[in-house]
Length: 142
Image 1 (cartoon, rainbow, N blue to C red):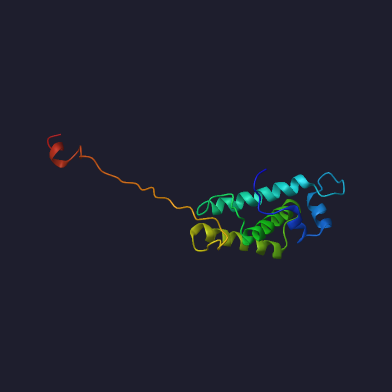
Image 2: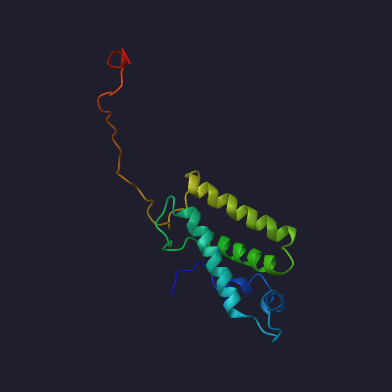
């Protein structure tokens, strides 16, 4: 099973089950569609990994608490976006999460003490130019 940063239970702590039913029940059966919830949780993890991979090995393990929080915010925002769009509060939470992740990606913000070790590279590039083929002296008379 792939590594995700939040669960359906985490989402249910912020969104009532009746609201989650409205956001996911495409078949009108009166129940939460777990596959849709899991898809949006996976999408949130992919979004987080896209930003964090610049500085950290992904999936993040252990999962920093701030990443769990932002994963919930992103997943809920995506669930609302499927239906009717998100409220201003949900949009602000999503925007804050993305701003934070951009700062992580650029190195302005660290994931904290419980974060995995940052990715460091020792690769370097060396360039050396060869002898010039065309010079003014070689081209005289042409």
